[in-house]
Amino acid sequence: MAATKEQKELKTNAEDLLAYNGKDYDDWLEEKHREVISENIPLLMNLLKKERKAASPGSASQN
Image 1 (tube, rainbow, N blue to C red):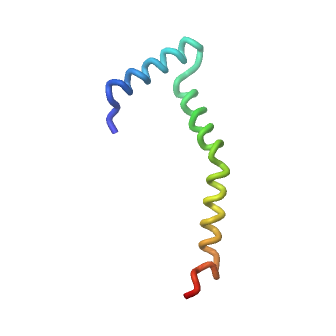
Image 2 (tube, rainbow, N blue to C red; image 1 turned 180 degrees about the vertical axis):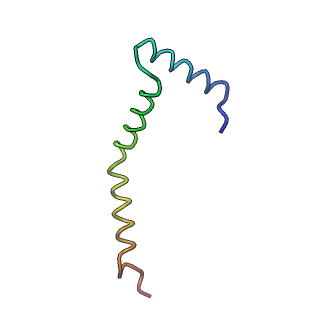
Image 3 (cartoon, rainbow, N blue to C red; image 1 turned 90 degrees about the vertical axis):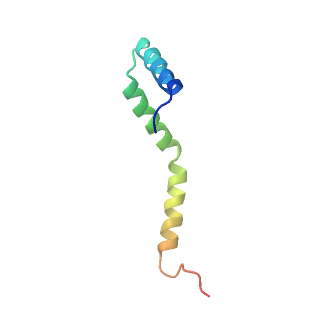
């Protein structure tokens, strides 16, 4: 996906603001990625449980 002019401007502004505050954009972005994953651990675990249950023997529909 090509970034639009507005998206590029937003990124540049964010990079500038972070740099002004002594933060690296890439470090900040990695932190945000980790936050998204951490906040969604319960969802991921529930999906894994459902997948495991569906894959277990005897879980198929009995018609």
